[in-house]
Length: 163
Image (cartoon, rainbow, N blue to C red; front, side, top):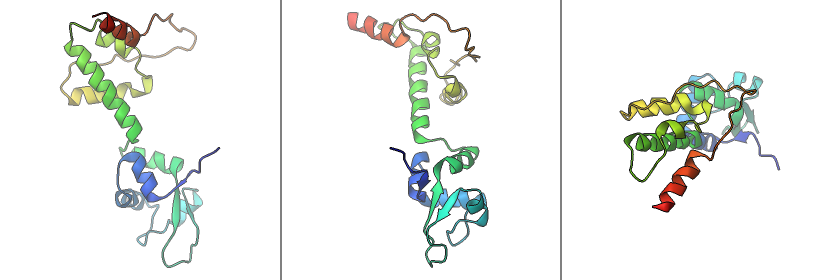
């Protein structure tokens, strides 16, 4: 089952945690939406919008979610799912940095499991929270995959279950 790439302004905005009005304004600012809400000729030509009935008095358009994602992310928006993941990693790493006698995993050890594409955003979030811990930059090499021991999560769980 494939999902349609076409979304209403409400659904597109929901991905980023913004209202349909705000989403529409951002698309207008980028020259993709006219004052009456209809897609601009640029949006239609680039395949970023589709208008069901172009001559209707009330424009009924849908927007290409993937195509508009690039534009919205260039304006600093992040999908809510990604934002939540960044917050969870920042919560975990800052708590580990503070330490706890019942947890024998370090923030450095846990940070080794952080996906590389989130390092910059998690470090920024940690700085905003006043946490001194920063995840070191990594350059993953496909040829050199380290042998992995039990994950830090499993070690933390097993040590806390023993207490």
